[in-house]
Length: 258
Image (cartoon, rainbow, N blue to C red; front, side, top):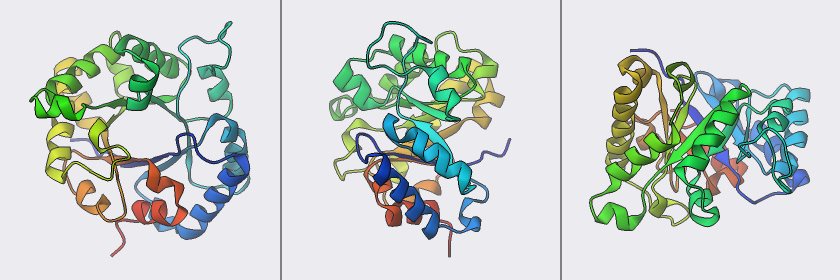
């Protein structure tokens, strides 16, 4: 089985202007040692207006951080007022782009078809999508959680080739655990991340599935990260609110310390 490099990404959502973003990354760098980065990827996903500032900071200070964006448009250019394209992000050395976050699906009506177009745009320009999937509380209580997630995967990956699938990261984020303080148990996370890997095996073969990195996202905190990361099919975390605190995010990144 191939070795999977864990990936911990901080999604800042609509928080922090570019000056606050610089301060946050500088403080994060202060709290982390070289050893904390070893054997894993650490990514920050600031708002669009802070991407250039954080790109410059990462490059000038030679920080071992990856730069991520929270969204992009599916088209490369055009009359789409207020939108940001994948080529624009690629020119800023963005490495990862969130696609299909539950808030985009719920608040902005993004369908699996829309998410699929974004996934393909991101890959077309040499970046890696972090494809977000997850069920609502009502769907979980109705026993539909796994089917909902599988359907989201199938719809969002329509037309994605095996080669492209190997560059994919999937983030399982139970909608009922995002920003609520309520999180899935480690067993819940493991069960769904394993189901995601199983669906990828169905679509792309076991080799692709074995190499797939699956994150858990949903009220990830310093107090639960170690147990979550101890699950065999959890390869990282998509961190929301806790990533806005340099101290908390550093504790999450450095969870392997004694």
